[in-house]
Length: 385
Figure 1: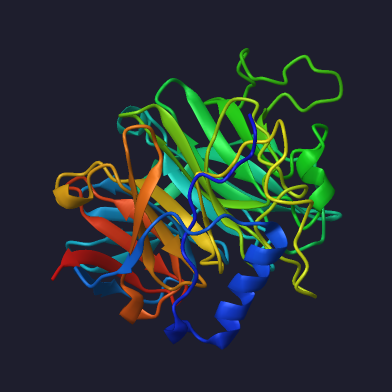
Figure 2 (figure 1 turned 135 degrees about the vertical axis):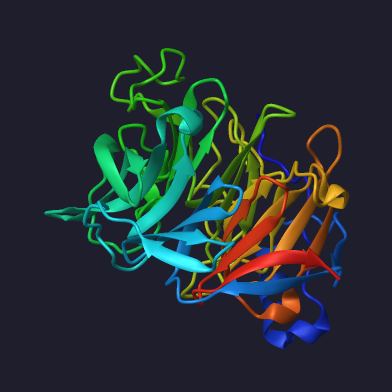
């Protein structure tokens, strides 16, 4: 597939400052970006109600019951919050993690058969003699302790670089688990099929390699790879209503992307990008498209730093049905992306800008309530005004 423009957020308004406008102009000129095609509006339909504080950096969240929420703190602590009573309990049995830079205890997700087995899946930075590696494990929750810990996957990319672990988890309802893996600051790794870094990985629930993975049997390729050419994907979500797997990833300076993940797809990093180098206003790569590489469905200039993603299918907010919700770190807002029937982004709405929080994680409870974890250690619930 040809990498080509599908949609693009418009440049920042003058209220966001001369520097931001200059940045957008430089990227657009240097990368040959097409004119803005998707309207962006900032709205105040919602407010965020503070529910809990003191949660460190709440990287991952998962509801194990209607009013019981598990929260992973990047520093290495797993907490269980009873939202009815307002109590917080630390869960024992979490192994030591490499908590440095962007690494640590990352995502937590319920196994598809959690109700029967009590199993949870975890991604984390595992200590290594050469720094740290991304790892995936599962364990069973028994009372307030993790038991039967099983290590399912360990990346082959060990590094002391503190950046770009990725680490988000998603299930497709057909016995497969998807794990995002950042490039660890090593750009070339994203195009190397012999390296797990810069990829989306697809595993069976027991950690084995599914027989229909696209690079299984390819000489020198890692069989777990599902797609390649990713920089730092920190949000992934499967939509059972459409069968689509969505991904958001950090660009460099500008050029964050929303991608529709395809089997065996190459998403271009670092050869093609909408971003610029940090040290100078020079475009990264050789343009924004190249034959054989998949185009993003949406991108952001300047960066919003997307760190979480969900497809909303809950009952509490019917006005958001089918929307993609994206938590923004640098942007300090909640982005709502509206899609048409073909999966094309047709509008972007930005919420909670007045909150001023770096939104790190998102979760939906059994009633369709939307919850947000912020880098300040605060937990919020989204409510209509």
